[in-house]
Image 1 (tube, helix red, strand yellow):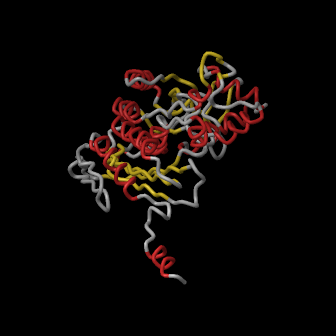
Image 2 (cartoon, one colour; image 1 turned 90 degrees about the vertical axis):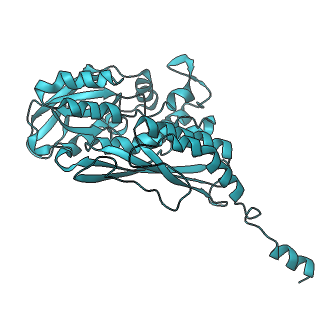
Image 3 (cartoon, rainbow, N blue to C red; image 1 turned 45 degrees about the vertical axis):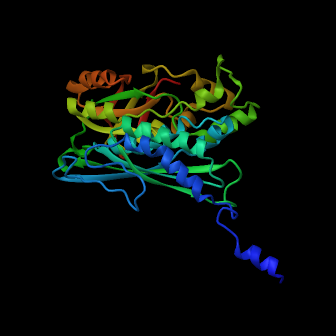
Length: 357
């Protein structure tokens, strides 16, 4: 071995191996103001420590139960990468976690994100994480930390993965669902979704491929609109509206309608011996859902167990409180309506549908 070869080997840097620490530092500096803007009681939302701290006592809890949720955005990332639009998936990531927390009756307290890529593109990552911070602020949830991992050789050029983790708290006596209190004739309040949210995109992408469509194309069901923009509409953040509905009283449970649709998510919060009866004519669905069913030849049953089909959240409410619950959702900027009721069943809970999509 020559001395030149020895010198070159001994002079290697982490950057030459594909990891740019300076870029990661630049990203942290850029997103720090956005993270700081999520400050709330119990958290200072400073980035850069080894762990994020949260003070439950300062947040006002007396006998809290912690509720944790972790999730990702799934193959919706592939749509965002193809469209080169990272402005909305940060909200998707937060929503998939905090919506799962609020349906337990809990207030989301803090959030951490994990962003992994082959080569860090600071501008793209900053847009994404700033979106996370905005969604955290809207949900009253502090962004107290995260991890950016640059892993050359593991991800193809331009690819990345995204995951989130959130923790909330609820006073012990307020935990949802209150399964023992549910009765036949309890009203099911459906809250409108903003579109696909973050589920079913593997099927969506298969339908697009079979139809030879790309995200930059006009939407086949609305030629004046961009297909990618419609697909990337962010998941609704139901935290403030759901907490407002809880304060109105009468809420016995919530179901966040994610993967599995209404068919599989609503029974998760119901007791044995009660079924959910849903009137499919009680809400209007976005044209996207009808087009997916038609273009893919997807049967109603498959649509209802894959997509939210226009309903992103369902509340189980005592009949006397149904209208005040709807009013609370609407006052908080959502669109709520009665879509069905609980009915006697014979065994494990299931969903019965009236009508067709």
